[in-house]
Length: 212
Ligand SMILES: [Zn+2]
Image (tube, rainbow, N blue to C red; front, top):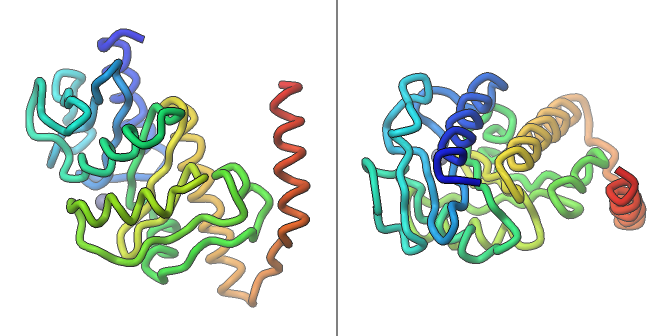
């Protein structure tokens, strides 16, 4: 995709995050791989006021190549895209249910079989650390090992995808899982699927992908 098409897709995804109730105001940020470089949303600009020209082009070290000040979370966007060549897009948001779980410091277990969409038997939650610093990026990379999503303790969620469309779908799914987990916990201790049951789900997902 051309840089212009990626700018358009990144702005569209940022707007969809707001429309789907996953993000609001100036919270949250998004990035997409652009050749050797990275396009990222800017700092302190609400999505409603954002244009394609406001999106910031960074090199892989995080240096601004063109545009305004990047999101304060540019470190984990760059580190994830550098460490995970199969990943093309990174979304971060403070959505209600994912952030609720993150504030409880809870990993999300296999409370519903769709947890496998994020790549494993659970969605990990990092310990709390202050936003915008290298330590948050280091903890996020560890929590994202073999996964396409994690929770950031007392903060929010990161969702990944091969492209923006997949990352948005993963984010939406993780928010659903966190809501289900929260709702079940508020009634009683939920039934958690076993490792064997999740193994079967993952095998079936592979089969399903091959046929679709
Ligand atoms: Zn944040």
